[in-house]
Image 1 (cartoon, helix red, strand yellow):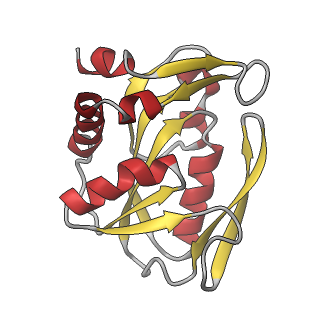
Image 2 (cartoon, helix red, strand yellow):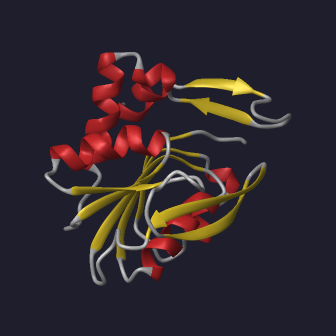
Image 3 (tube, helix red, strand yellow):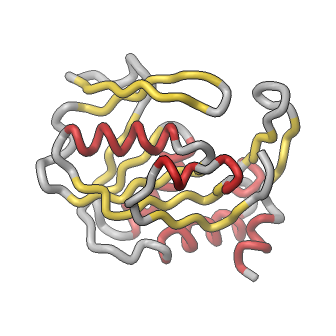
Length: 175
């Protein structure tokens, strides 16, 4: 099965970055040319909506979002940590499963009515994704699809993102 094969390439690191967290490491997917192609192709194949641009957070969202934007002849909008974007930005604070953070997007990144797909490596509690959705919607964009390589369903991220079309390629039970 597709997800089982890809799942075998994802390394699990216990107690990183904090005790009690099992970090799902995608660097083991990235270093294998077959796994990387399978990950990118699987994410791309799950996009079943018309859209104009890909929005993705640093850094692992960039890894998966950029080649999909390129392959599908779409634009790419980076979402970054504070202080990394050079022009006027909007911000959104959010909760992580192990802390708090802030994301930024250029104020002119989204045109009102623009349809976007958000791509990231992981859906856990949904906090990061909800912050990205809020940024897109503050600028008048419409999120038509969310795709994550990995989902941790026990952390209930889908509940926070209720009403959005979400696909994940691989799921892991447990935290």
